[in-house]
Image (cartoon, rainbow, N blue to C red):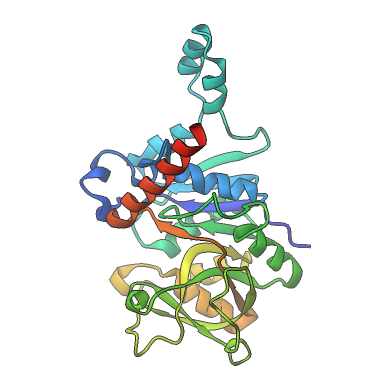
Amino acid sequence: MKNIIHAVIPVAGFGTRMLPLSKSVPKELLPLGNRPAIHYVVEEAIAAGIKHIVLVGHAQKSAIENYFDINAELDTQLRHKGKDELADSLNWLPEDVTVSMIRQGKALGLGHAVLAARPIIGEHDFAVLLPDVVLDPYTTDMSVDNLAFMIDAFANDGHSQILVETVADEDVHKYGIAQLSQASRDIDDNTNSNSSFKVAGFVEKPSLADAPSNLAVVGRYVFSNQIFDYLAQTTASVGGEIQLTDAIDALISESGVNVTTMRGDSYDAGDMRSYMQAFIYFAERQLADDK
């Protein structure tokens, strides 16, 4: 059994798509209803069995680390005023879950951000969760679906897993699109369920005519520790950045990688239009629960 208990969450980006909101507030701390977006991402990881979360950050984003720390002064004041329940709700991380932060140092892309976590992750296999993507916690069971399913699939066959979802034809050009292996091409990708199968590669933001499928990468990964070696050997390409997809291609050719079809819905909390839609959805759900 390959038990995954470590996760990397890259949070160093400035969030230019979310300006001016993200000028002084990290985009990961922008609210979805009554909680910041990254709160849901970390809850998802914990529900899937993750015990150690590594935030790969930037010097100007220490507020994210502070969010997961205990504010002793605030805690004392709340309890002094008899607001113990509110104080308890702020210290919501389970005692067996640790959050660490390491700085990326240089803005060299997602692949470099993941590699920056290597000194903390060490020789362990691990998950990666992109905080721009928030999965709907109201329509799925995070303890068994999506990331949890991927971790179990990895434990069963040892293949790294990448979450994908079906997107509309007009949106194909916005995403990395999965190219299925010959044996996987008959898979029904329209079912709202988790299913894991082999992938031949990925095409980054293709036109609809050139797209090998309509399965788009969602932003959840479960990797063999071997991905670190490939990232360390990957040279900078597009925009002078170290691309995670280049290391994934190497992993596919050497040991094989699977994609997992997503169950439920996802929201791009790093895009202004999608973020506003997500805020309304989460707020409405929470207001309904408060009635």
